[in-house]
Structures are given as structure tokens and as C-alpha cells.
Figure (spheres, rainbow, N blue to C red):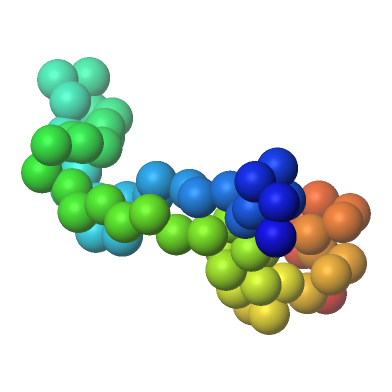
Amino acid sequence: MKDQEKDPILHLPVTGYMEKQPDGSYKLNEEKSEWADIPASTVAAFLIEKFGWDAILKGGDAR
């Protein structure tokens, strides 16, 4: 596989640590969260499996 054809890697929180802000909203604490580098094709396959092609392509709940 050529370099430009390699699957992009996404740096995603797999365990997010949310902290309540003074205004009542919540924000992800990046330092306390656990992160993983996951291939984009793995994320895409998961989303398609869970939500289906229609929801992905049409944007929203296609049930």
C-alpha cells in the first residue's frame, strides 16, 4: 500500500473524564481521559454497523 493510501489514524478518547464547569456545562478533561489511536476505517465500520448506511449518508436517524 502506498503512503498516501494508508488508513488515517484518529486520536480518540476511549474513556472520557468530564468535569462540571462553573456555568453548569461539562467539558472533557483531556489530561484525565484515556486516549487511543484507532484507524479511521475501524471507526467507519463501527458507525455503519451500529447506525446503517442511510443514517450515515443522509445525516441523522434513518429508521
